[in-house]
Length: 355
Image (cartoon, helix red, strand yellow):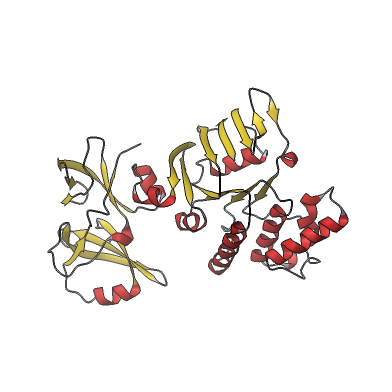
């Protein structure tokens, strides 16, 4: 178990974060500068908190009151950096063996061999980092972090420097590796989908504060605040004016909507995730509104549709909502006569407050 409760004074704010992790992997989400990496660096002993305590499996790593601050080498923590941080003058095998100093030659050889097999790099132990691809270097870094059998594995945006294909391959490799890893894992990312696939629980940081923590689907379905909704990828939101206990006026969308959740005086905004907007052919269902297409953008598999409610757009930037659809759906949509109908399902609406 990890008990983490620290304060760290930084130039723009004080990082104030407390949580417990008993099992599995925890994803830490947040924008750049929110304190994600600093959290990992404090656990690893690279940075020292201003105050607080860090306890891992009943071992005190840091306690400001007792004056305890174990050096990094004694913390039994593996750290995988986003830039790999391999030693260029050491071979792959020597890099992996670096954390095994003090163990017998036979034990070191066995563990290095096991790690090379685990990350699918058997036979490459004599190569140097510059002779490897970026994906291979990252796998070596993962093997080096795991070789000493740490109590905790810290992953700081490990895929950020990789192209899309390598990112996908290494993500699958990491998920498989973590399924066989008995220790705890903290995974830092600003990519919601990446963290969602790897971690069963999420912790969301904003300006050094915990703004959400819990099961990933719960946070996704009920972000609670506008900040958490934005940090978890919600692209559509509007200020609201309550009409009744289950009806609101979306001020920025210029429409009235029914809600399933009861509206309280605390609620200030409504949100709708882009992929949950649907396109019925008739306006027979609640929360179905006429919409005009202002512009589009595309990825290999999806289309983002920028939609104006209530009337035709005056230019490509004149829109209220972003909807995301697969290209198969786009093929059936694009020839429909304007206005289209869009439905903002009342069960998918997010009622939120400002932090």
